Image (tube, rainbow, N blue to C red; front, top):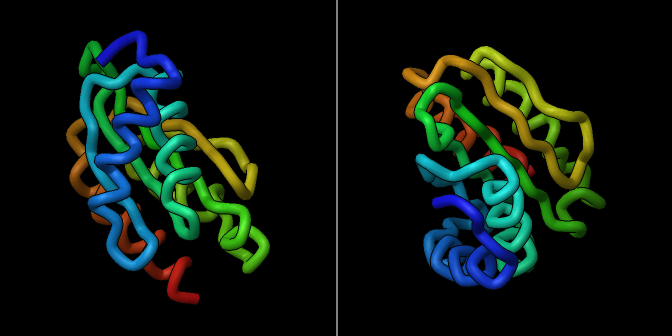
Length: 131
């Protein structure tokens, strides 16, 4: 997917919210460009109401792994941090993320580790929401 606008991101987010388990959305979406990944994660967070959204996937050219983590305001106020969830996930991909509590995005060159990154992301997000 390339050139995702806000309307498309909101539509995609609706489908992701249907996949939420106990306030956590953790999915893999390959071929999504960085800005589109951000839009979808934020739209899904806004549609979720309360919880954590993590999206991992390969870049459109397949050469980089990416991660985006978005945390709802109530969960941030409860101490959940997007950086604490996304940092270790990005490290699995051979890179890093930003440090903001509500949204981080990053990744690295280790595309082969995307499934491991997703498993870790799901584990981290579920633990954070359960705390």
